[in-house]
Image (cartoon, rainbow, N blue to C red; front, top):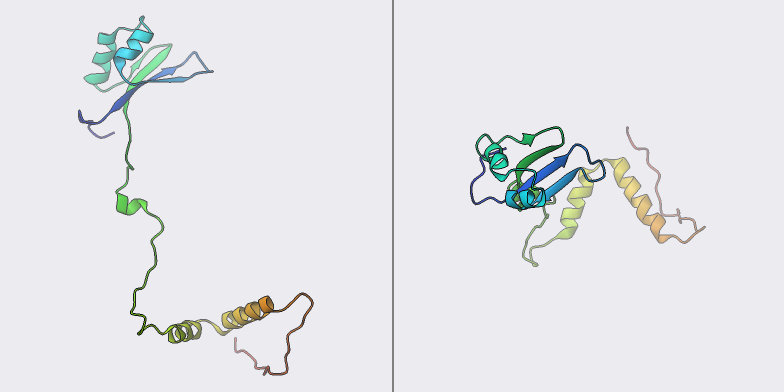
Length: 142
């Protein structure tokens, strides 16, 4: 844990070793814990938790102070995992046909064939077959 400054908010956690039904209780401050459980001395617990920053522990409980994280631990630029993909171009200069052609020519012929087959299959009705009178059959080199 990093050094805790006075500006950071902390909570007091009370871990019960003998209560399996409610193993942890959280208090906003040590004074509230001591008012709820008068058998624990405020000064004793405060000495443990403030000077050496170690938890107070006995056979029944373990008491420790922990910081409250109200902001992400990572910087905000790193926490965003989905980066938007945007290309801004003037509408007159936009030529999607050239971009599409360039993309598909960069793909492997088998991938291009699979894409065309998929598009054609979407336009066919159930049970309808593709008209192959305009198709030329060519062997694809592996």
